[in-house]
Every structure is written in C-alpha cells, then in structure tokens.
Length: 388
Image 1 (cartoon, rainbow, N blue to C red):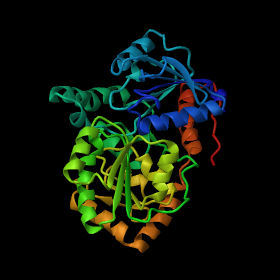
Image 2 (spheres, rainbow, N blue to C red):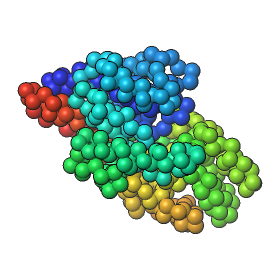
Image 3 (cartoon, helix red, strand yellow):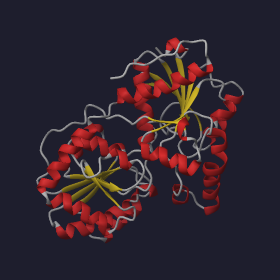
C-alpha cells in the first residue's frame, strides 16, 4: 500500500542508531520501525552519526545504516547534504528530532514526517556545560526550531507528550499524531519472582534519569525491608558518581549495577523483579515500563509526560511527584510490603501492556508518511491502511 502512494524508498535520519554505546529508547524505537518496514518490503536507509567500532556502511535487520558524520557534525552535514541533493534518492523522509533538530523542513524535497518523543527542556542544563552552551540548546528548541516545524507533520509517543509539545513549543495540536511504541513478544510472564524483594531500574546512566535520587530512596527502603535487593541496569558517564554514592551508603552488597545487559538477562530481571521504578525527569514514554509490565511487573515512576501513558495510574503502577524523596520510598514500600496490592497491579500491568505492539507502531508511523505522500502527490488515490 505504501507503494501505491509512491513510497518504496524511505530515509530515516537520527542522531544515533542502536549500535551506538549510548543508545536508548529513541534508538530502540527507530530500529523496530525500520526493521518492520524492511520486512514489509520497503527499502529503508537510516543515517546517523558514527558509532564506535562499527563501519560507516552496513546492514541491520534488513535496512541499511549510514554512519558518516561525527557526534555533533551529523546535524549540519546531513542538512547540507539534503540542500545539495546528496542524501540519495528517497520517496519519503523520517526525521527523528532528539534534542537537536536536523531542520528537514528547510531542505527535504520528499514527503516527510518528524518523530519527536518529548521536549528536552531542563535536560539541556543537566547535560551541557558551560551554561552558555545549554542556553544555546534551549534557544534552538524553544525559539528557533518551532518556527520551522509548525507546518510539519509530527508524531509523538503519548498524549501527555503531545500536550507538552503544544504547550511548550507552540506546535499546533492538529499537526501532531500520537503513535505509541510497541513491546516485543519476548517480554512475557514466566519463571519465578525473586524470593526477596527486588527493585529494578533500567536506563542510561545520565543526568536526566536522576538515578542518584533512586539510590537515596532505595537506601531508605532497605531500612524497612532488610532483605531488599536492587539492580540498576545500564551504562553511561555517571557510573563513577553512582558507584561512589553506593559505596558511601554501604550498599554494595545489595544494590547492584551490572552495566548494559543483554536481552535474555533483561527479560530475567523483569520477570524476577517485584517492581520496576524510574526517577526520570523527561521521557517520551518509558519503554522499560511497558516491557516490565508485559512480564507482569508493576511500576513506580515519576509523574511526568510519557510516564502518564506508559502506566495506567493506580491500575498497572503508581505515579510519584517529580521531586521523589520520601514519596518514592513510600510508594515502593506500598508495593513491596502489600502482596495483594502487588498482585492487583501485576494483573493490571499485563492488561495495559497487551495494547501495544511494534506492528501497530510501524503501521501508524507509515500511515502518517502515506498521508504526507498523498498530500504532496494529490494524483495518487487516498488509502485507508488496515487496522488490527
């Protein structure tokens, strides 16, 4: 059906791809979409910055990867290539706007959509030093970029993220579609829960995840549950500071940081955990939440856009104030000590997670691109893509 509206070759542009050492949820999402489209017979190319240890050109799950630019030069180089017509022949373009935009509305000659998972806002000051550099990021996100994207067709992952994009960036609501991410079928209930309370968190060890707040809450929770164990799985440049914090609290024997884990180990963690938690300040969704939910593991997470929709509050998990502190400890305690509460949330988590598939996500994203192809090429017929 995509071919019927002239879409056979699709280009995706992103900051990083799934092979990047710092890949996170955005890269997981893009990889699943590209894989599904390639399996459906589309010619897909993903262009990103270089990933250490990986070639400039390659193949992954049926789609091509092009990694020709540096960490930050990828934005300017991609835009310049687009202006000069050197990005190759493509029938459609998908820009993944992850903090710094590629400004594709300026140079793209193809029908295009823009994937914006969430507004970055205070993330600039968390990540970029000196502060003057962070202010440049804020200026681009809040003042410059919206002027170029107000007429673009944007996609985001959750209704709550859409509201923030409208309120903070001024993008018209009728230009934004919501297409939630999926969950791989491998994430499912199985095996036995840990015999002792086990709290699991998964994510890159970077400032926006605020794992230092989680460590404090877990140390307090351990005082209430002396057999408690916890795992923070992920890698990132804050590892050293977090390890020092854990040592200072004398928590090395029960609070573990195994680094980035493989799929099988991650599945095992989800299945053994009593509860998953996230102290993140910004998320477009929170895919670890729904992955764990598919395994029957409820979540206690911060009350932010994205998290609002990744859980069904009070049914599949609990929301706590952004400031965390005692509220996070108390909410985790509620789930850990109350078997009936945990069982109820577990059942709700499975039910909530059952709504999300990568097939539906890939289809919804492609449908948005087909709409743009139809708008740019009015001679082709209107298509209604089949729904599940």
